[in-house]
Every structure is written in structure tokens, then in C-alpha cells.
Image 1 (cartoon, rainbow over the protein chains, first blue to last red):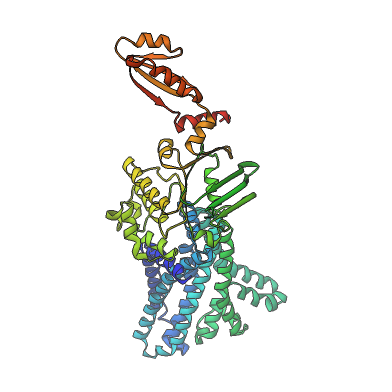
Image 2: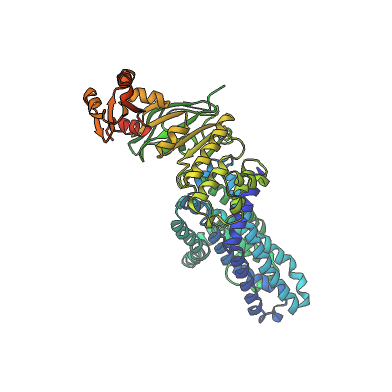
Length: 274
Length: 298
């Protein structure tokens, strides 16, 4: 099983490399991380936290948009593209399980994403150290942001595979992927905000709101990072809610989502008849 | 030895249309079977069912003693799809190496396989730069991986030049000699005629003919053509003696039913010295194919 997954992963990684996805993802993450580091340098000092923790707070807000976007861009073509190229029927006649094919793609795409995240956050870390030697106290937060970003990426990669299987055509899959991105990381929060405002401290705000946040992998990611980090004070917005939800719950959501998404993707892929 | 492939009363319906209607077929080890039929006759559908890519409605299919599409069956069956495609960004060697790994073989065998199909030179070039014939040969190379017991080849020679075609059939002969069963579809009837053991003709999802070329000839009962070349000056005399003969220069062309072939030949040889040559032309697979298809109302 491992051989088959790794063989698929190796092939997919080569394809990602040649399609410039590795370069695009790395440059994108590095660029945004550096811009944030530079922009985030103003409000330090008076907050009494180290430079790196502030950077991590900014990076969290960035990652919540950028990581799902890059993950969906890499994954929307995974199944639909094979259907369109006509490469799927052949691979399905090989003694390889469909879940192994998806796992192979996931390993490769996750490697690309991990590389991009490592380079981006690494650069941000170096920039923080360069400006403030006391930044070492922010290292655990940066590490936490790193691995949760990879898990967030895994969730959206699998979600992309699921959409790709459902759409069966690359153009349709691209549309669905963009829809999911908009819905999960932009509109979801706006909707919650609107609901909380109209609810005015009622049942929704006290009971449903925390669960709604946990149910969205992007929000859970943001909650976990902001709540666990000392930089909570440095961030605004949803962070207020972060204190109301126990840390283990957001951590659980961040950990469970990748597996749930992969299960969904596998179920959708099994329904594809070449 | 047990059959490599057993199909009985296989039926498959697409949106009310019968794509396959009670088709039965047995393929023994080492047998080369040609699947013929018009576009849409059900050839590809039948192949996809054998491979387990699409489900079927009724009947029974056993591939190497297992259900089609099961891990056991997939491990012993190789497939070459019609218009085989690969990711253009990969090289031939990388692509074959991946397929080798998926079948549990060493990826180092890739070069040797590409060599066998005459692609050694292009092994490190991206498949995106290959011609259709070269892609077809990559497809053939992957079908050779790991000594499959059954090869399912959907129009394997499309896009190949005549020399490559001959090499391809030579490869198949070698595989069949080692006990592999081969099921291939083709529109190139003349090559199929010479290089397969059994012929199956599908029409509108039904199996309208099945057997060796000789069986099919007997079944179709098509007339045999005789071409008689008369010696100088005797053509008119012979023409008069052979009613129904058509004269084309010095040659007389006539046809007779299969069972009167020997009697007619005896009459012709009766002319002795007046005849220079006689040629017997049995009905070709093409004749049989169009006869069977026409009878079927296609």
C-alpha cells in the first residue's frame, strides 16, 4: 500500500513541480509573509509582547485566507483533470484502491503546501528575530501556526478532491472550489456576524455561535491559534469569541477536519465512473 | 486449465438502450480474440465491464476466477484504452516507472519496457512532445507490465505505422505463446484476420458471429471467387464453357458456392493446357463482416 501511495505521490509532486505549482505556492507564501512582517512592525512596543507573537497573529489572519486558496487551486483539477485528459480509466484498472490514489495526491500536494508554509513562516520568523532578539518567546506560537496551517491545507486539499470528483469537469470543479473558498472563509464569517448582530445576545450568540465557529475548519484554525497564542490581545474580531471556547475544542476541530474531508473526498471519488 | 475469461448472458442497458444483449464468450489461456463491430456496437462497453470500470445489469462475468474489478482480477489484467492518454508533463520513463510501482514491480524496469516497444530514445522526453503513435506505444508498454494473464486492448494499433503494427502483433504472439489471453478490438480487419485465433462480431449489442475465421466462412456461406487465366487464344472458348464467368482481359472471373468449389476447380483443370493459372480467393474477413452486418440490418 505504501509503495503505491508513494509512487502516486512522487508522480504528482513532479507534475506540481513542472506545472510551477511549487514555485507559485512558495513565492506567494513568502511574499505575503514578508509584507506582513514589514507592515506589522508598527504597533509593537506598547503591547508588551514580543515581535514574533505579533507577526504570528498577522500571519494567522493571512493563512486563514491564503492556505485554503492555495490548497483548493492545487486540488480542484485532481480528479476532474484526469477525467478530461482520459487518464482516469487506465489508472483505475490498476490494482490500486481509490483511497490510495487520493492519498498519493494528498501527500504530494501537502508536501508542496508544507514547503510553502515553511518558507513563508520561516522568513517571517527571521524578519522578527532580526528586529527583536526577544522574539524567541514567540517561537511556540509560530510552530503551532505552522502545523495547524498544514492541517488546514490538508482539509481544503481533500475538500478540493471531493469537489473535483463531484464536478467531473475542470471548469465546474474550479467554480465549486472558488465557491467553497468564498463561502468558508469569507461569507461564513459575515453571515455569523450578521446573525450575532440581529440576535443581540440571544440564544444564537450564546449557544449556536461557538459551534458554528468550530464547524468551520477555517474559523477553528483561527480560534485555536489566537486563543493558544499570547497574541490574542494583538488581534481583533473573532478573537473576542476565542476566549469563550475551550482550547481543546478548537484543537479537536483542527485535527478532525482533515480526516473528515478525506473521508468525504473518498466517498465522492468512489462514485466516479470513468 | 481454467478459462481466463468467462462471460455468460451479459446484458447492459444505458438509458433504456441495450448496449449489450445476452453476450456470452469464453477466452482460454493463450487465445487471441478479436472483437469486431461498428462504432457503438458495444465493444468498449464490454471491455469496460470486463475491467470492472462500469457495472452491468445481468449475466455473469468471471475474470481470472474473480469478479471483474476486484483487486485479484485487476492484478492479472492489463488494459490499453482507446486513445490512451498520459499526463503531458511526465516523461515516458517516469510514467512507466509509476505504473510499475503500482503493480508492485521495480520502477527500474521502465527503460527495458520502453525498449521493447521501440521508445528507448524518447524515454526521457516529456509525453507532451510525443506523437500519437508514440503515446500508443507507451500505452502498450504499460500493458506488458508484470506478465498479465489477460490483456484487454481497445483499438491497439490505431495511430501505429505498418512496421510498428507488425512489431506489435509479434509482441502479442509472444505473449500468447506464454499463455496470456488477448482480447482486442479493431477496425483494421485485414490485420485481425491474420493475427487472431478467434473472431467475435458485435452488432447493436448482440453477438452476431463468433468462431475461427474458417467457422465464420462456413457460417456466412459466401461464394468463393475463382480467377482463371487462359492461355493465348483460348479465353473465348473457356468463357463459353464456364457460364457466369466475367471476362477481364485474359482473365475470367467466376464465383461459386463454398460446397461447389472442388467440382468447379475440377472442371477448370479439365481444360488442361488451355489454362495458364487459376487462383482461388476465399471470402475475406471484410466480406464476412459486411455480410453479417448487413444481414443484421446495419
